[in-house]
Image (cartoon, rainbow, N blue to C red):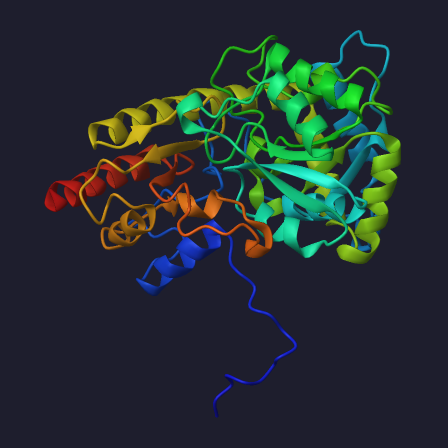
Length: 420
């Protein structure tokens, strides 16, 4: 029986970029963990032991009390541990300190972002192009606010200055701005005095900065302090008055994506709102895993894990960058953060000169990448465009192991040579 005209109450929900490409690869035989495939489309880091990293958690003991629901904002002990970590990393000696009441825990990054989006009022919210693919549906499904795109230019290295921010906020009447920092996919990082300037503009103009900092420990440019990490928390003056809301978690920076333990940090008023939103959106995260996360936030663990990430992923970054350039793939700006390279394939022979064409050809060689058009965030497809301005781009991940990266570069090289 045909189902073409049934279930009319439901709309077709688009897949995010990573889900789309892995679904297409699965049709060609891809299965996670298959050594014959190289998944340069993956949005997670390799999760096994790294040289110098702390031992990976292999088992979690569940207390009897932790069989119950967790509080919607998260268990108090974890909230205290998160606040303490941010105070130690970014706010030593500052009079205003984060407390547990400035933290809400949720079951994954998308859950944290969804809670925040559901808490916004009837405001104009600015977002950048390109940026994280999952923002597209997030910015469309909630109708209270109006999403306004801000285009970043590759020939400027995707730079957006404090003066640019001030002009956009004042000129477009923005009450909030959402961005990933470091940026997924370009790797652009707003840091140091520039980030301090952004926080100052947000404070002055009462524009909330919603900062997705999930890659904040993958920083490849010099940063103040003794760890290569950056956060807007460093530049907040008053934790309860400055309109700065930060999202992070164990997903990338601790390399435990499967735990789905993430957090939101911001003024108590915001935390109350996102926790209320969580009560009807998701009901809260896993109590046993929240409990197990607390030791991972101790200083010695954070230092060892961050330094191990920097050594291993820094080497993979250099290898992938050099390999892509040898293949004739251009890079608008060397990534200052994340584990992605945003490559431009326009100089390759057809059909490889188009992101979608490159992706489909790479599948034939058992390599997965993400076409750039998925990062042209267009909520509700309200922006009319014949073709994406990023259709000549591809995002390459150095999240997988070095062995997988090397295999991918070898096979992509054969693909490009055959096309020439």
